[in-house]
Image (cartoon, rainbow, N blue to C red; front, top):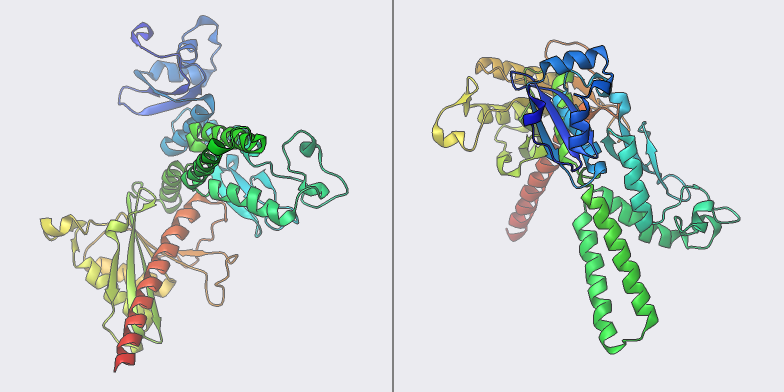
Length: 442
């Protein structure tokens, strides 16, 4: 290819190398796209044998500009995880994943980077780039000066001396106030409630500026406004590095990993999850939730009021739900154009249950001649605790698969299962409430 004809900006960003078939074979990031891309064609590049082979296959180059190098780094990592380019082998290993941990088990809750998920603490991630996460936490600490000492000591830590810790470790800041004003906003921020925090800052600044109209020389108000505006600027800086905290790219990566773990023929764009909720067979309901590209798609949710009696058990109830759902799907197509808009066939079915429920689903799919992959997920009898390992059952396999807690594939499976459970319980409670009101009137 003629590199002279390629137009590349000098902005930070991500670049793709594509082969003649239009397939991405390499993804890289750069602080200066033009300088980095053109460097491959310099005589002094000193490329490895694998890179030289890659160069012979490049037929096209595409670039995505970003607002910062940090954003480029994160975007690169997310895209490599999603597309798995041939020449990015060194970034395929899941061991590179890192998480942000809030150590809620410590006397002083802190914020840390870890590669391991344990039983205690709150976790956010996974993230592929440890460097980008470090930069994000540096910016977060400017807004909310958290402590990493874990226990209260006789004197404040070094970071308290340079303004990166409020001094809770040395008794200079109330511990409960620290949890409320420092840790709680960080958890909210990492949990995706960035806009709520920004609006709160803007509202506080606006209220203080109104006070300042009648108190123009009030130094305390002026200092507080300055402090809040500085925090807001730092917060918006982190937002400029959008993918540090954003979860949409993580969800896309989770689904990709799920396809690899389950050996699916393609990445599942539409996943359906099913669960049953009842009390001794009364007010029995079933739920169907839909995830599109790794995220809940509530437009596709469906709820079923079960008609069979309690003697049929949960498996019999599930049978009714699946039969009612599957009547809309035939050979991975649909019976009518009208139903196609509402009942597309899924690429994967996830059932809350064990072998019995899985075998039932397999029989029904076979009866309808539907080649839809299906799995069941269960904690097993007496193991409903949050720390109990989930067992994943596959058709034709005697032993279930137990994925590690850090597995991205497990993350998406559990999200679908938990959402189906939540939706079923919500509908069950609605029916119980209506039944109670009706009986009370009578």
